[in-house]
Length: 286
Image 1: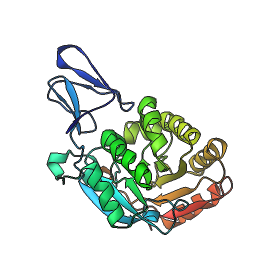
Image 2: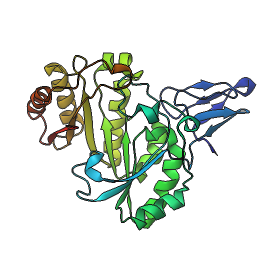
Image 3: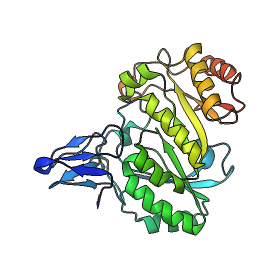
């Protein structure tokens, strides 16, 4: 473990995490909403620093990134935990538990970069769960990665406060950000705020990262024509018409296991709508 960045000490050994907009107030001995940032005697620690629970070598298109280092392999790292509680999470076996519950391996930042190079990967991707919550681990790997000539990739929900964003993202070369739905969708199903995600996307664009967007279409929740139009028009206005959009098929999992998978016809209809605004729209997870 490693002492966390971005927190303040309150009275009686209580701390407040300031990494993401949840801004958890954490009593001594307790963990934040993300499951992996723990208050130990009045100091906040990242319990997953150097402790990934998932490591793999993936085609970069799996992230998905279709317009960044195409046809290359990326060294993928994920830990336990997430700062969202999405009822439909497709990776809930990682995101909704802590590192002790699901297990982990020891992997230092230096060793991670060595393994990426040994396997001839052109990049390292912070993925599978929400990489914001292992910010310290990402930051230390990313600094080494830059020196070694590899690229850094964030696969993220975009839910991070501005100070840690502005410190980390100059090291990040490409990002895929989930735009999950409208305000009501985030409030009910994720415990988040789409407006913060939008603000951060604009900031990431200013920094100069390559951006691609993913939208998981869930039947009856975020798949109306109006919602697709609103999302695509926002991307056009704020990120540009050449920003790739990935429309991903939902499969029933976690707390929404009773639903049906997204019909292919819904994805095709959404793609047709989005193409009225954007040049690069793809259907995925089929």
